Image 1 (cartoon, rainbow, N blue to C red):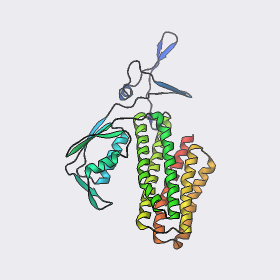
Image 2 (image 1 turned 135 degrees about the vertical axis):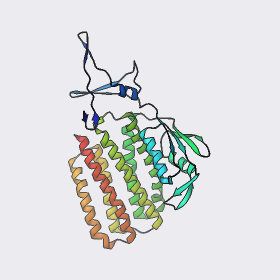
Image 3 (image 1 turned 30 degrees about the vertical axis):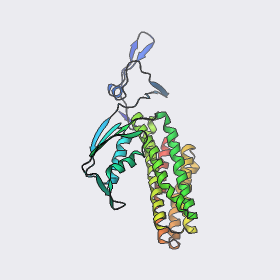
Image 4 (image 1 turned 90 degrees about the horizontal axis):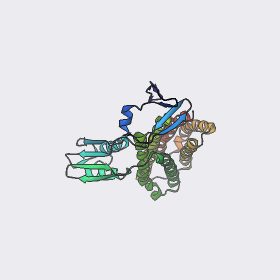
Length: 321
């Protein structure tokens, strides 16, 4: 039987004497989390259900991959995905020391880019490096108890990045806008760590696991959109008009409102976020003739932020009930 994506396994109650009742643990689950005699498990009562959990992670998993035919972005995302899925040791093989970097339209060094990606991930290091392979290993691991703190940190970093993008645009502060590139990497580090913890340990509130995954992934997309927008502004170096600034402020307000909604659920904020999307579309249509070509491209890029927020808003409502 499956309830909310969780497999439910039936167990028969065993009566010991007159006072003690026992049930057995599923063997597959016990092996997965290396449960042994004498270990302590956490038991939480939820109505007519008992939720049994452990702070142990899954057993260490190793994997070996060959990235010879992949471009720079693809193999970096592959390494990140394997880290998020919970692998503890990753051996990376490659026949060619250089790969295509499509955005920059040039060749780049494989090991240099692997170092870049490792710096975006928490607790993992390159422990061995040779001419045609390297080995990455997780040498320190956070606890699932850190997850909520990590998630709040992600929210704060994303809202700060959004505010600084608008501030940098209105004041034409190139250095402030450029700073979003490095902050993007910091946010990525926290988000990847949070997703890894969910995959390795699960969340105590198991019913909301899919929503946590979905919301973090949306925040990741918003983080990417802010970075792409910052790059565009730096490369084009164009002034921001008042109509464009008003649109950017609306998008920034939506990000801040979703942060408030997540930690202090309120139907008023739900409605505000819903109306924001339609108001934004109408504003872009009405102001489009007053925007420069560069401004119009910028607001169309950032409009995707509101779509991600609307998706996450639905997930947040599902978490409430």
